[in-house]
Image (cartoon, rainbow, N blue to C red; front, side, top):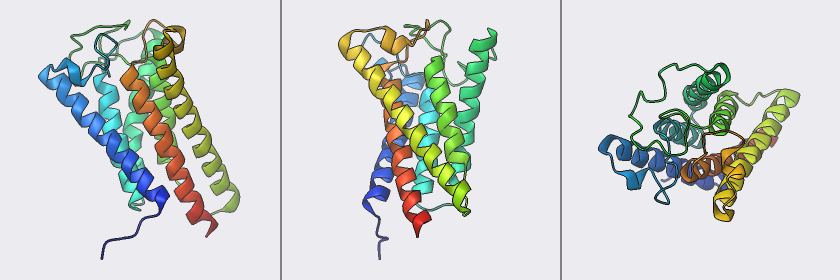
Length: 212
């Protein structure tokens, strides 16, 4: 018989699947130079290859968590490291040659460095990766702290994604540049919104198991 999933588990798996598909499609767009797969709407900043790769890894990690695989969250440490390295590049004005490892940025739209994601996107990926890799402890206080942190992180990511999309809709660069020279693209924002919602769904699922 097929396993029965709660609505939270179904939502989580659906969001994880969406992230996985977005990551795969965008990477194909970069590899095949199909701009329409990495830019939406046309003419705006693209979904960076590293963000697409992180979306794919997050999707797989969340799918594993939704299926109950205990160590699936560790996969999210890779996106966390990518986010941390990108933040370090920007903070110390360095180039670790990570931004174009997967694909050369031939578009160069609204970015200070070829292939580099925005600081806001990098920080969000770092936060999400740490949350997914942090297991829910069976001890009451530590477990509740982890669940609260997951809910806050999911809310923050969702808010950043939604605010960035709102900035594009309203034509307010300050809301999608976040005070930097590199824009958080509409597709970046969509990834962050999906990831934030997935973290909230995962936290809800984990809280149900924690209470029982």
